[in-house]
Structures are given as C-alpha cells and as structure tokens.
Amino acid sequence: MTSVASYNFRVLNTTIDPEIHKTKDAKVLKESCQQFESIFLAEIWKKMGSLSRKISGKEDSDRPFAQMEDLALEMSAEELSKSGGIGLWKMLYEELLPQLEKDE
Image (cartoon, rainbow, N blue to C red; front, side, top):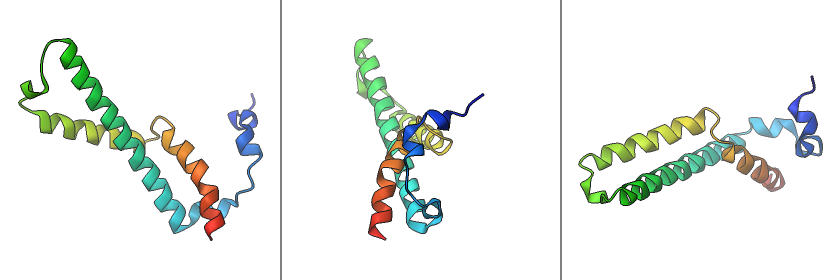
C-alpha cells in the first residue's frame, strides 16, 4: 500500500528546510493558524445555531444561557483545532511557512 504523501505533489515539490518547523517562529505560526481555525469554526457554529433558531421561529433573545452556549462552542472549536481540526490550519501553515523561511 502506498502512502498518501506519494500522491500529494505539494509535499514532493517542497524545498523547505525541515528544521524550520522547530523554530520559535514556526511554532507561533502553527499556534496562530490553529487559533484562526478554531475562531472560524466557532463563528460558523454560532451562525448555524442562530439560523436554525430563526427557522424554528425563535429569536436569539430566547436563549437564557447564551453566553454559556457560546463559550462551549468556542472551547469545542479550540479543542477540535488542537486535535487536528478540519485541516484548514494545516493548509494555512503550509502556505505561510515559505514566507517565514524567506524572512529569516
């Protein structure tokens, strides 16, 4: 069985030094990309909840525990992102990493 990496042409054509992943800036970049993904997911989930309430005829003001629900969504999104996420943070990281290498 062949690995998925053999079909990923971006991995095969990369010229990035593997040591750059160990730098402090790369770690900060990775963390920032994960945070972006978690904020993005939380906002999508909040908007989905708001729209589903509108469809059912309720208003956002009918949420007595709105702050707790939003916090739970944000925490869930953050944990999802840290555990691999949906892949958005990885795509951002791969796209921005060459810029980091050029800056050094």
